[in-house]
Image (cartoon, rainbow, N blue to C red):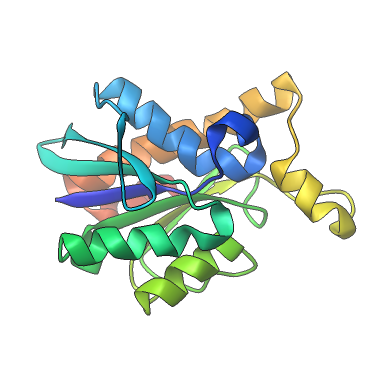
Length: 185
């Protein structure tokens, strides 16, 4: 069984923001594979289903971005999950908009949500898919850049990245992370 986690902030308030590209990816998977995201446990909204013959839990932590690890560690411990069965999708300012990068391990960079995840799991060895959102014009505007509402055209452009992330997850489940990295990076 795979745990596929999208990082983001509660959607009522933060829908259509750059910081919710992980949630947007999970929503696309849930929609395409008829997985109802209507259950709550361990500070998260989740749904269970099957993608490419693999049992999956799709997860959207509700702890707010910077505490994402608090929810994820509870899921990992409850299901005694191996790290090779964990996939985390999140926004990244260091990746070009409408593109993705897949890695099998690595640091959190400047992403506070990933810092929380790595600290809670006590490892960097899990698959992550970084959805590009680009950088703000002014570094001092970072908070507003990631959680501010987006113009419709820009949001639609960024959704190309979440679509790629969704396809990459399906590829990982079907053929493994190495093939997905060769195909999408």
